[in-house]
Length: 128
Image 1 (cartoon, helix red, strand yellow):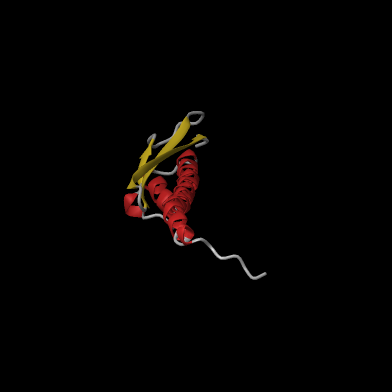
Image 2 (cartoon, one colour; image 1 turned 120 degrees about the vertical axis):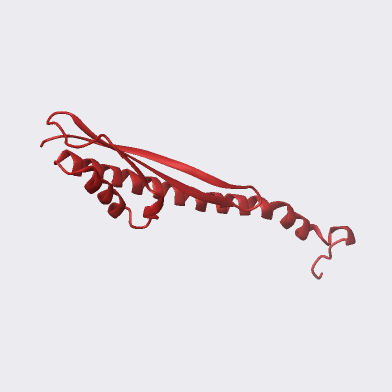
């Protein structure tokens, strides 16, 4: 006996199923990609904030700390990085803090687009 033939009523079933499932898959894939980009940026500014706090804790100036933050995040747009420091000079035994903010634009096709503003703080005890 040969292969079974489909009934005429089932002819576009696969196309209809694809049309229903494809938008959901696109949302999931692009959501994962955008989440990964945001998470990478968050890790980067966390590291940059710690580096800026280290410079302040060792007696550096606010300008040096700001430049260190920008240098520690080369894959991010330095012009969009916002740095707020606890001030210099640092007094021994007090914390030196650096807060870094960075906007991350995202686009998820068929769903939404916008900007996440990521903010991280680094702190170290002053030794100078």
